[in-house]
Image 1 (tube, rainbow, N blue to C red):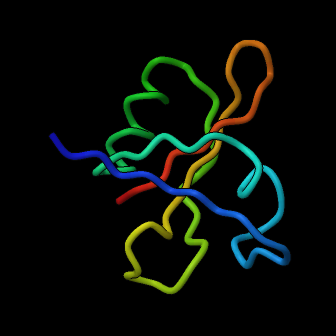
Image 2 (image 1 turned 180 degrees about the vertical axis):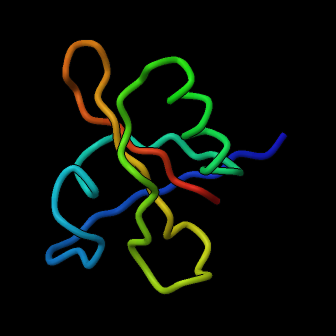
Length: 77
């Protein structure tokens, strides 16, 4: 079994302002398909954002909130 995991610790993180570096990340293989699936279920979600060099694995994100208002992100690996 395989699992991707991201742990970010440090000051001056280069990947944007919150919630980009302050919320749990759900890792997906195809972020465009995941955003489309959530949008089809009426989940308000951001557009896909490139938060690192183009083509760099793990640098595409989208953001949404759960029903209690807590932020989450999708990260494409």
